[in-house]
Length: 180
Image (cartoon, rainbow, N blue to C red; front, top):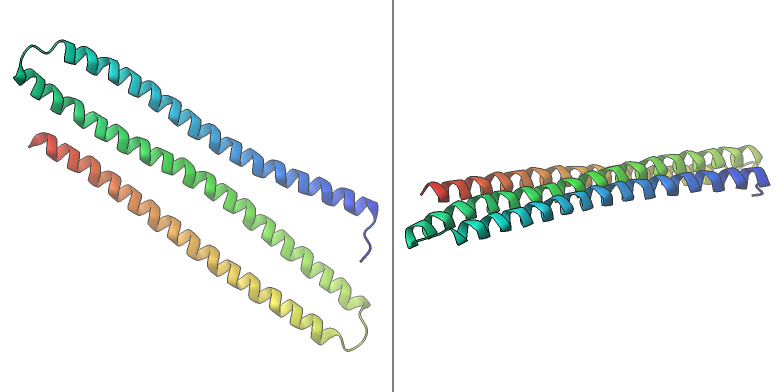
């Protein structure tokens, strides 16, 4: 099939825009991840300085035991919150990339159907059966892709629920340990 230079230029321009969108989403995700890491590093440094000051002020074993318990609880909660934040950023970036992929698959399918429709107009008599078979195969592949996408979304939702449950349990368990 022959494509005019204008069509190739338009195709290249569209592909460049798509690549830029993918790169933009990936860079935004990396930026959010780096921001989280920088904030966590600052917090960890500040906490370490405060802990060192508190340890330096300890005068007996009872103060040390009380200090140990008071320092452990916030650390567990912060580590759990950090892990959940990292997961949330990764999941959000993956969801955005997945949405872009779905858009591209849908656009590609439309283009294939349009090409097949043009072929039908120029095809010799009797070739309708072959083209119908190709369209049927494309529909089957699209259906399988849709099913896989749904399963992937359900898996992501289940994973998100599990991460939230583990976060609540870890934070709640640490709080119970502190009270005991």
